[in-house]
Image 1 (cartoon, protein in one colour):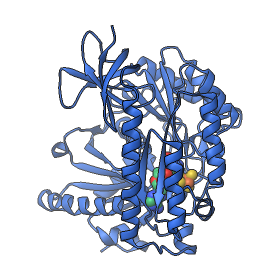
Image 2 (cartoon, rainbow, N blue to C red):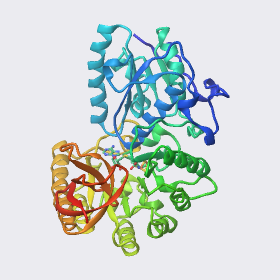
Image 3 (cartoon, protein in one colour):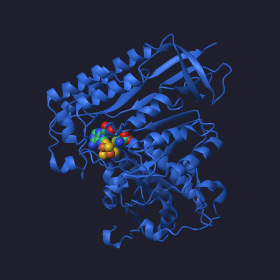
Image 4 (cartoon, rainbow, N blue to C red):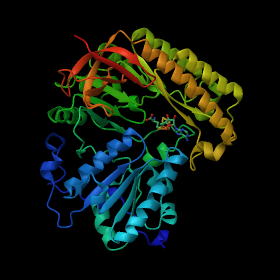
Length: 474
Ligand code: SAH
Ligand code: F3S
């Protein structure tokens, strides 16, 4: 139905005309205050898939749309625009969205005027091919084009699908205030894109080159987040610790964010092992507000596989980094990401991964079967030669190993007290609260006299692989 040549492709830098009224300076960026009246205001529902960076981007999209006078709604049935903010990291993430789109198309056929947009990494990955798979989609928009969302909504009224697919190294959205749900923990994007080019990974292709947001802007963002009631900040970036705004490195940024009055805790995700500098470790060791918890993606315990993945460290270097971190910060909690069944991974390679996980004993891990992604270096240069069944077998092996280790580590906390930031009612029992410990473990306990936003000491009396259970210490 739609051909590539007939589609308008908008370029953010060319098309976006900052309106002096709207593009407020960081110090006075209140989007709610500066949103304009819009006669074509729409009710927009944003459905988010994938990682925390996408959740953060959905908050950014909400900011942009609200600024333009639109409303975001929390009930999809109230929406006349549905935007899916998507993930491209593994094939099943994309399959899920295609199935979701088919379902939404039934509603579109029924209602006629429903607008459907696909935003984010999968939009950037599949580009106009997405319109072949789902020709009823009205907007296809990559992560650097969100400023054009209001324009896209106007454009589709005229019947043309809208493609916003330019990657733009200059786009950091530093002047836009995301709109977040109320809570105690705010996620703050400090860096966009990735320059690392791991051979298995689609991120550099769909999110473009790395760029860091100036520390001064981030600091004023955090001051505003304190005013909004947030107590904990999680700094976000694809290789968050390679942050450098030209004047400050990541360690300096940690100190400066922790220095904001009213902030109780600072964390970050995900660092790259090769960028774990002394400046970062020093801030983790010596700055009391920086949580002693680190998500440090390993990917494989075999140096040969790490080389093919272009991770830029060996298994030995990773191990040494872990020893150094534990020496400097003995109570540190470590988690990781592991991929099994990468191109050419032998039984011996896999055993090395298994044994390294057994040796390091991570508090928790995200574990994945390798998924070949079109456009990546591995897809072009290497053979996806580990049979699916074997990938599955290796995955179950490390999952059971990790469950045992996580259970052991969590049960070793029984009888101790851990500081927990109270987040809200426990899902299962409204008489109980849940929150995260300083080591980012979900903790559940009776409410007692605590309030949401307090940090309380919880004495642990039982634990599973994923949860600590206890009561507030006297
Ligand atoms: N540096 C980023 C990585 C994003 S991807 C961050 O941690 O924020 C998250 C994880 O997905 C990666 O660490 C990796 O373990 C996994 N992953 C990435 N590409 C993959 C692929 N093609 N197949 C399977 N897992 C993959
Ligand atoms: Fe992907 Fe490697 Fe960057 S995993 S996000 S290319 S550090």
